[in-house]
Length: 134
Image (cartoon, rainbow, N blue to C red):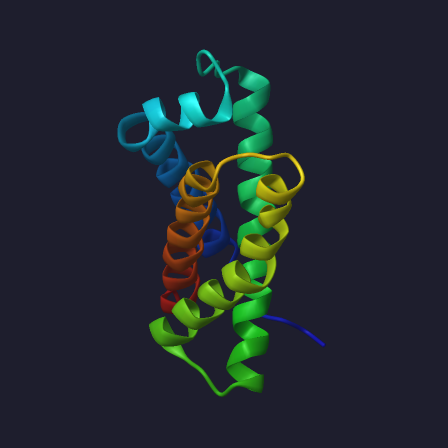
């Protein structure tokens, strides 16, 4: 099957994911995240930026596929389809998997909420970008 991927949209959505993360973990939630995660200071290296961007590109690429499949399967289209797929990806993959951090690593629910709030917002924005960009 030939899946029409808009690679420019994938890159823009990945960059949006990265920018949301930068704002989320610096301007909005840096102090509580540092305290709850047990990290004394946030260190950003070239390697961490590169790995974060690679992860964002992979997430964006896979989310684009999910949006395309959802459009055919659930008959969703446009921004609503992107939002639905972004939310389904978060509630089905991110939220339950990261519960292990709370359950097994004895991390706080506050840390879970900060991290999952970022992923929820990021996947919703990425879903909007990927579904709206034709």
